[in-house]
Structure formats: structure tokens, C-alpha cells
Length: 224
Image 1 (cartoon, one colour):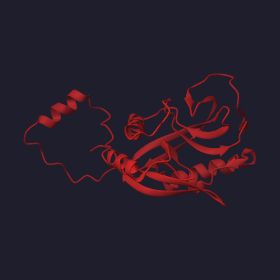
Image 2: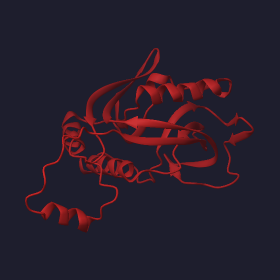
Image 3: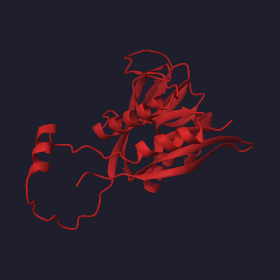
Image 4: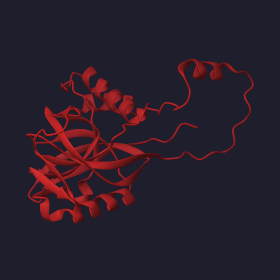
């Protein structure tokens, strides 16, 4: 069965670093995610028609990361200034994310690499895509968006250095995703991901496992 989802495209260096993290804890991973399939999901659509995908893609193409340090009033004022000075030829700069901890989703038994701080632009992008999908009649449960990169499935507990992540509530619950609670998290050496695009993916099950195919790609960069 074909399923669709939007996800951030992880750069090769970031993919290499995440694969190295997997290799470090590989004996504890019963069903690791192949490095080529590592991604950060923005919105999972499931099944969708061509018409629905076209409409959502049109919305996706309009996304522009908000300026970090300007209020709405400042942005409006700046846009009204007459005869602005010509801007130098500045090349678009990629966005970045810092992956800094491991955690497990209870019940689903999914081990993932996560972010302690979710950038505003990332939450805004996910919200825009989800709202576009809802507008096309695609049913997406209303849940807190917790950015995560799945490293392995069927994980009940994991030892990492002197720390242990277990699939039960011990210290605190940080949120929910896919109806599953996130429990204990373990800090890891930061992994910086360079993000310059996100894509609509088609997910298909094959004899060799799940295959992800890029249907359409959208470039994103820091606001100039």
C-alpha cells in the first residue's frame, strides 16, 4: 500500500553522523533504520489522491521561514520603507538543526534521535503542511509535534555509555506523538544537521524492506 509523507531532507554529513551513532549502539538495535531512510517527518498523510497532493504541494511551495528577530510590526514597517537600498548579492544560507538526545516512545517501542529545542521555523513548516492536508480532507490526528528521527524499532531499553533509556515512564513525560508517550531521554554529543530542502515522499513496502521515493522536493533557506 502506497503512503505519502513530508519530511526534511538530511544532508550527507548529518546522515553519516547519525549512521555512526547507530553503529555505536548497533548491538542494542533489533530493527535499525537503514541510513538511506533516515528522515525527520513533518506530516504523515497516509493515502492521498493526485489532486490532494497537487493542492498540498502548492501550499508547500509557498513556505518561507519567518525572520527570527523581527516582530510582525517591524516586518510590516520595513516593507513600507520607500526607495530601499539595493541588497548585495547574498546567496541563500541553509538552515540547521541540532540533534542532542536519544529517547524511546512507549508502546511503539521506537528509539529516536531528538531535539531539545524545536526551532520556530520547523514547527511553522509542520503546521503549514498539516493544515494544508486537513484542508484537503486528509485525516491527521491532532497531536503535539515532536521532531524525531527514528533510529530503530522494537526497542524496549537501550544502554548508551553509563546511561540507560527504558520503555517505561520513570522521570518525566515530555509529550506525545502517534499516541505514544516519550519517556527518559539521554543526552548525546550534538549532531548538527544542515537543512536546505524538504520533500514529499512515497513509502512502499518491498521484499527488501521499506523504500522511500522522492515525489517532489522544495528548497528552503534562512530568510535574507
